[in-house]
Amino acid sequence: MRTQVVIIGAGPAGLALGRLLEQAGVDAMILERKSAQYVLGRIRAGVLEWGSVELLDRAGAGARMHAEGLVHHGTALSFDGDRMHIDFTDLVGKQVMVYGQTEVTRDLMDIRQGTTIYEAEDVQLHDFDGQPWVSYTKDGTTHRIDCDFIAGCDGYHGVSRASLPASAVSTFERVYPFGWLGVLVDKPPVDPELIYAHHARGFALCSQRSPTRSRYYVQVAADEKVEAWSDTRFWDELRRRLDPQTAERIETGPSIEKSIAPLRSFVAEPLRFGRLFLAGDAAHIVPPTGAKGLNLALGDVALLGDALMEALQEGSDAGIDSYSVRALQRIWKAERFSWWMTSLLHVFPETGDFGRRIQRAEFDYLMGSRAARQSLAENYVGLP
Ligand code: FAD
Ligand code: DHB
Image (cartoon, rainbow, N blue to C red; front, side):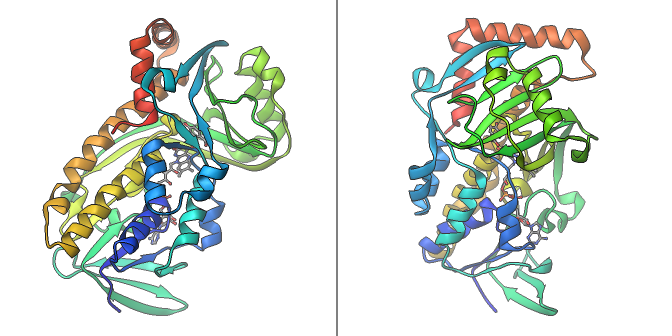
């Protein structure tokens, strides 16, 4: 078998790249380790920057997002119950779209015309310094696909980055001593906007998926087990971390999904190795606090898609040569912002009372300074 681009991974990065390439008439095949159902069952990000909205529009996958997504003009931050509003429209003239990653993935799957092979086992990358090819096993038979380029969009635990010699990659990492316990519930959101809350007991987030479905998170220790959290325990803990008026208004119910995500900052450099490119979580992870993970992944593939089209259709290597440097500039800015939001809003056991006083000073500075709020808003809605 032969195709122009083999994409490893059918998460949002792989599916979006596949779509951008097929729109341009480039042949691309996607290999995904899991089933389509499994991929759709993962509950992850919920906030799209406007650049991501425009990318999905460009991919022809935006219709349901515009019909069902919720445009948010701002967000709330609270610190020990004191609340502040960050008005994106007033501060930077931009908005975000609340629309779940599951829905983005479904829309991209629905619109795809090219081949996606789900449940492709033992994917292996070969000769990406020369004439690349990829092998995989499906239903007991091993297949070979020859190609011009390989796009590694297979997430943090994927095979693409793992196929590289350690000497070829530099990695930068910070692991946080806590995770997020998330609950999805079919109840209306407590507030029209998201609420990011710092409390002495830990961080909490009130998010949403639709006018009838909410997503809530609480900071938990890194080694916490989801089985230890009954719904009642979760709701009690969430209420304790919010201001009393919000706590009272929360509509609780049986969770329809409950999971713990670890928090990590991670970047691999560079993003190009001969004819192999890394994009999305395969190359970088951000802690979820700034809602950047999915947006960064889509930003990468927008650049990579154009670069591959230029190389395959115009014979120009300019885009693929500059992909790594250009993508990393944006990635590091999002890493910084996600780390900063995480540092402001979580309880860090090791920094003690001094750390909390500094966090409070940062919050008070934001409350008193339009310039500081503007910087937060500019990063949250997405840098160019
Ligand atoms: P992924 O979505 O990870 O997709 C990679 C795909 O590659 C997967 O489908 C995987 O099955 C496949 N794959 C892996 N290995 C192989 C292989 N060997 N062969 C073939 N296929 C393979 N971001 C936010 O902004 N907010 C959040 O609340 C948030 N919560 C998260 C919770 C969790 C548990 C995780 C893991 C991430 C979360 N993120 C969040 C981050 C966000 O979801 C990711 O940044 C986004 O999914 C990145 O998309 P991607 O396509 O690069 O990677
Ligand atoms: C959601 C996740 C985030 O990381 C975030 O910052 C905002 C919302 C969510 O899952 O809804």
